Length: 102
Image (cartoon, rainbow, N blue to C red; front, top):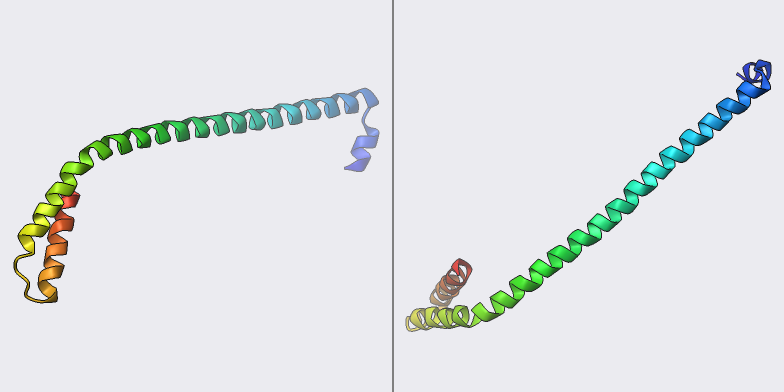
């Protein structure tokens, strides 16, 4: 391989090295630009999701009072039958189920 390079005319060797360096710079530049775009897209998506989550928290805060009232009503309905630990577990399950549906 080295003998091929030494037998090659100097101008051809310089042209090939120049072409190789151009390809190197273009390839690395393309990867760099893609990674920068990927970082900005990731940050943008993160901000969008955080904004959506903030809106969801605000809307759920306004709806949480009726949910808590319904949970208290379910617990009050289930509470009058104290028959040991099984009744308490059943009441907790009923309250959790009712809360998850709303």
